[in-house]
Image 1 (tube, rainbow, N blue to C red):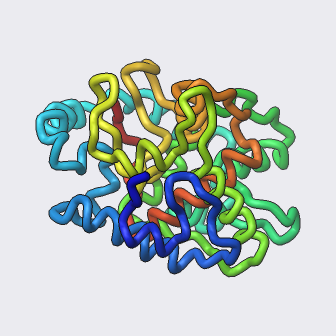
Image 2: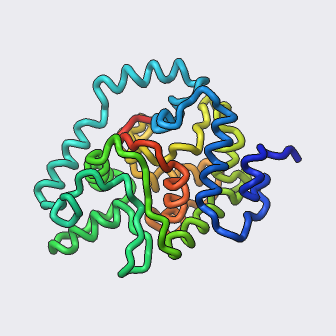
Amino acid sequence: MKKITSALIIMGVIFGLPLAAQADPASDLKAFRAHFKKKFPTVKLSEYQNGVYALPIAKDQRSEWEEIMVFPPFEPEVEEGKKFWKKHNLGSCFKNKGVGIAHAYPRWDNKAKAVVTVEEDINACLKSKGQQPIKDLKKGKMASVAAYFRSLANGKAVRIDMSNPGMVAEYEFGKKFYWARRGQLNFSCATCHVHNAGMRIGGNILSAGLGHGTGFPVYRSKWGGLGTLHRRYGGCNKQVRAKPFKPQSREYTALEVYETYMSSGIPIQVPSQRM
């Protein structure tokens, strides 16, 4: 079996074999970046905020994408999210009224002793105001509100706090999920987005794992609207013929922690448009 790059061997990961028992996020991040630096030497770290459009092979698709972004199709939904945010005064639940903080999510909540996502904090805020939480955590109202909230931190580099052992434990859980094979196709997240990043499958270019999540919620023509990161996770599981988990499940939340940390230093740009 062909070995992956030496950078990923440092992580103790060889095509789905068990990961190293000792959690060392900083070393993982260094190795992850090194892998993509070697694979795509001309792509700057900040460019990975643009998803698949950052890759040299997607040059033609990027031109089309840049034309679309002149008049982004997601603007009406973001405006709806803004109206909802202001109507319910959601900013009152967040530090600095929610401005410039979304790049630090997911976060560890010491009181709950759990990871908290943007979507969970939005619903917690609504509950604190005696309002009904948003039920659909994949699209619609939640996607538009989350997109507006995260857009308030556009341009800020991803930087989540890994100082709590509980957060590191969830990171490790998400890391194992990322590298584990599943479904009838026996694919892991890494199969597509590390080993085969930049390759084509079914006519589509596989994006690099570096930068994943920095543009979510995103607009996809396939969806006809905005969708959250956990909606995309569910779609990926379906594509490999694996049963998807529910949005905000421990599995997807931990995966979000791992992917977000692997995107440390990359500026967020929310929302965006993806294939």
